[in-house]
Image (tube, rainbow, N blue to C red; front, top):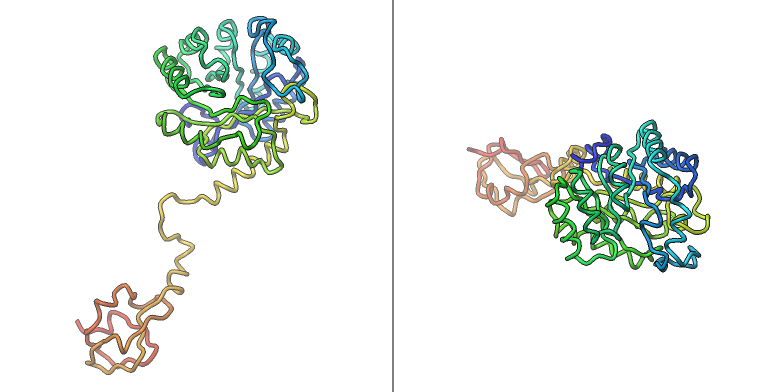
Length: 352
């Protein structure tokens, strides 16, 4: 991941996930609105702003039924819904790419047809493939032939299909395949998020970067995305809007600027408390190590030349003398001076 998505120091050096704000078609055909959403995504800390590039008639037949919650999005026909938001062409996407560049945020757009693959190629660092195209051999092959890194979502997929797509992409020239756990429900109920699947993908594809594409409704603490990160997601993708109360489309399960800020706040807190990976005594613990641990302490007066026994020593704080870890080593040793009760025993008190 970090060798592919070279965004900034927080990803490379601080173990942050690569965060994609999926604007998708929440711009609703307005180039001005699309740019405003890019601005908000960049301001909130996202590493990429992503769109969707398609033409409705190339994507869905006129007889394609809905697969989303029609209480949230009233359209019952895919072709009709997608036609509302397919006004952008090459020039608009290039303009959005340039705007992203000015805002120091990566530009992404998921191509849904080979024509889009071709004209998006000059402005993409890597490709993102939608869950629904995981079995689309012509599209997968065309994208892989560009020999760029690919991120692919896996909503509604069986593991055999994920392996098929992964192998096809690698075989056709893709240098690096990243895989996102995803649930293809709009919206996804929290209990259906199944975030443990992130770990399953990590175990099945140990050479791939694993992430999570989310369709749950954001809670005020951004608990789902934060948990996904803790499960090992190195890429986080979520729909993005400036108004979650807007009807239809992908607004109702999207995060907004405040959600994005909260998520990054969570990440920074988690990363701050993670600390060192290997267990060891910390520099801040040295004073506690010295004063809260115990030493071997004289419990009865010991005269010069007398032997140390379990009846004339005990263990008390502080830990500045001989550690009790050496208890058995010093038994029957003779002392070289008189010692009083509560004296802390040191090595130079013993005859060699």
